[in-house]
Image 1 (cartoon, rainbow, N blue to C red):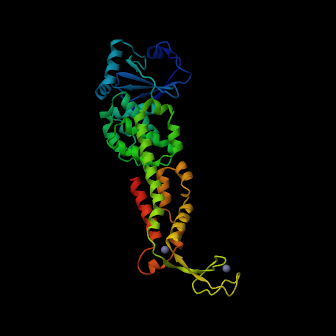
Image 2: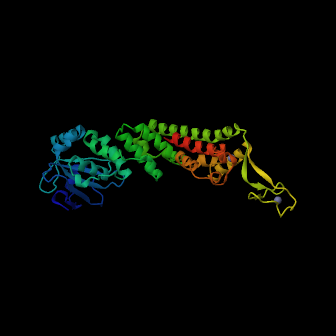
Image 3: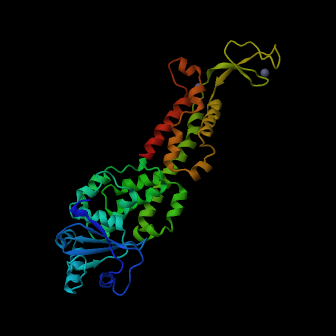
Length: 360
Ligand SMILES: [Zn+2]
Ligand SMILES: [Zn+2]
């Protein structure tokens, strides 16, 4: 710990500090922490956490605070005018008591304002912290002071890399509060990666109720639904496309017409049935391709469509569409022997590519 970041505890008996800061309200049994951001600091910022009700004090530079935000300037000048001072150390500094904040985010914000690079992550902070910082940034109008850090962090946000559904709401909050230029793209990507269960949870989420306009949620919900509708149309349209081509091809292997057992090419009869039964060629017809199309979709847990479309995110549907299925590995017909491609394989390939494009 260096001289500039000493963190000590204020004894809970130092109630004068709190009477000045919070009026007659006494602190909880939890001791206050104090962090010195500037050893020559001339103001004490008292932050109270909205969730834990814990407080933390920061010895700060009033000049820096005033330069960063007109809101801070008003608060400090009002406090100085009212001569409300703390007794921290021997300073008798004015105290600014803030309420309903997030201590971690406020500490990060104050570190940035005081050029404490050593205490600022150079990579993307936890998304919850980023969202809370966005709320504080918007609340105290510190957008321009934080702009370089916002740029560094938020250009590394990849919604597709987020594995926890809970983190999606923090990305939305941060993007909205920081007024990111690619906000619409982020909202669209979030819509593509969220499940309907998550969307339902968001309706009534106190954090979102307080800090996110309903129009943002509506945009995400609409984008998600549009993507789902396009994917459903794509999957169902595959059957129609397959029926358009009537060409039939020979397939590998032969079939017993009695029991439908399959045998390799060259087999002469089906012993379980009757040695005199003539085995027949298997044919890749439009009907066969349609039937196998649904076998592939079922193997990928996409048919029937209702359960996966109710439970999955659009991104998960797209991922399943791109998975290798039995048709790619087993279906072999004479279309390929003629350097062509079977419509079934072509349709499955188009399906995966088109689905990726819908998601982009
Ligand atoms: Zn048979
Ligand atoms: Zn075929």
